[in-house]
Length: 316
Ligand SMILES: O=C(O)CCC(=O)C(=O)O
Image (cartoon, rainbow, N blue to C red):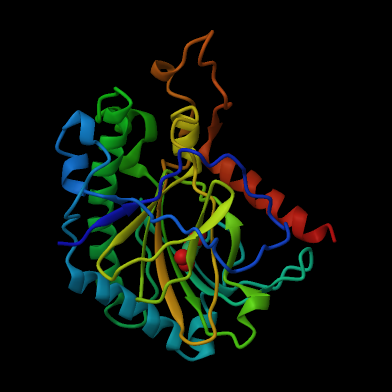
């Protein structure tokens, strides 16, 4: 049975600074293991084992199929992919490459394909089976995410059904992000993705068997070793806001290597774009637990984040 890994984010405190100098690619020597969560226990209602889980139930063939489809997409001729070159963050399909960051002199080695798969489903037309596989995989991940969110809400003493009211998941925004990191001869000078948090609620990531994801924990970078068939789940910004900081958004980055191409697929699951996410009133107390975050429409949050990113890149 496959396991699902959830990074332990309780003690993460810093927020990412886009454009900051990228520290060494090496993780700390005293690498702590990433906690493995037993999925079936998380959702079985056993209160003292809420974070324990196994058996996310997604077919391994389906996971391999979606990885293959993304690889085949990246292998297409450049002119076949160029019709998807995105211009705006909310474009339904956007293909491109990360550009080197003049603010930090860091070289980036990453191609990406971002596809909105919910509430409206989109897909590139090539390879031919991409649309079918992506639809099936997105549906399966949505099921896992609902279960996980339900378990997280229950761990806070809230009903799992709260999520539909709070997040409007029926029209929730789901973005599939495929990342291709080609090998880089001078990998110690290059980066796949700089340190960042994800803006949504939960991100579920798989990869092709080559590691490269690192999560920040107590100020150190931990290698996230992801076994094929595992799902790697990160807590995102909207969940940190909703839980008033009880769950913290995970700071993570992707490094590159000089041997093999790495492929990862991150499925980012957010509320609907017009949902305002506030700290849940049930988790607040005006004296001991005041709201630490102001509510904001998810769409506005995404746009402000993008503006800050662009401004920081221009300020060199
Ligand atoms: O490729 C990875 O491991 C990280 C991907 C990621 O952080 C992202 O797509 O936001």
